[in-house]
Length: 86
Image 1 (cartoon, rainbow, N blue to C red):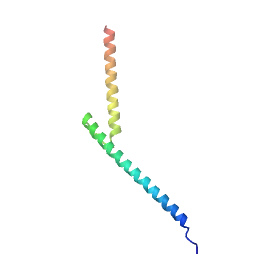
Image 2 (cartoon, rainbow, N blue to C red):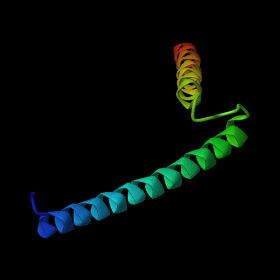
Image 3 (cartoon, rainbow, N blue to C red):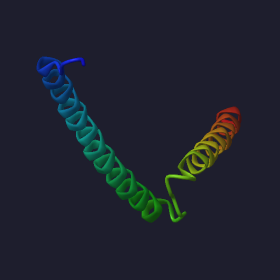
Image 4 (cartoon, helix red, strand yellow):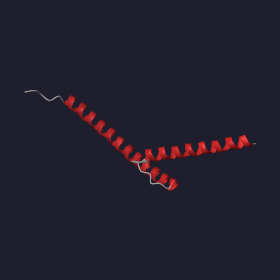
């Protein structure tokens, strides 16, 4: 019959404890980040007047970017016409 290696068991238990600690840290960071994301989405919803969620935030971002870009182009066209008339 093989005998049990106590040092091996201790090493395993230490490693298991360390991995559990790391997993706990990761869960805590994940919960914090999730709360922060939800807070930012709520803030953006209030500022933009459009519901922003973690699921649609990229679409909302792209739409806002397109709107800003379009507004800028129109503004530049107007300025160019004004310059041309002066």
